[in-house]
Image 1 (tube, rainbow, N blue to C red):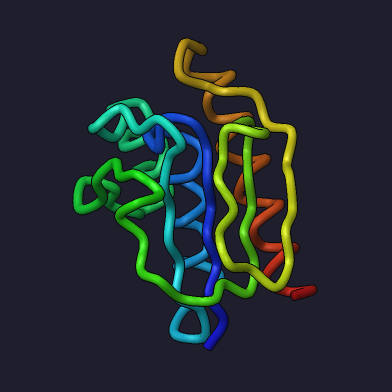
Image 2: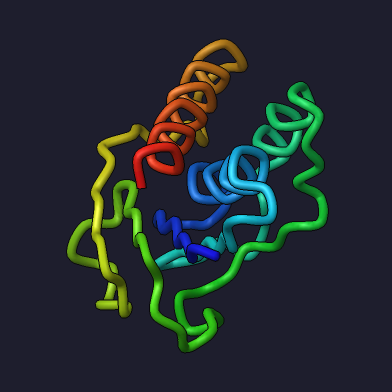
Length: 128
């Protein structure tokens, strides 16, 4: 089993959706985690709605800090917009995806970001 960590600033949009896509595309072969460098404490309802359109229920997820992660070696740590604000986590591979924060985007733009994240996660799991 491979361990994937997805990190953004608030852990309310991008990293939550990436975690969901890792579960969708990786199934039982991956353990997916997400966290934020400055978590908002909630998952954005827009993210919940966007993933519901694809049949995934994000309501079971919660926004969490990097401090809430298990002390394990991650195979991949993927950052999305937090840059140097992300403390070092133990990871074999580090990837930085430049993905805009969809928090304030309209539904169509939000879906575009969601689909971009989905495509990147699928490729990472297939190639990783």
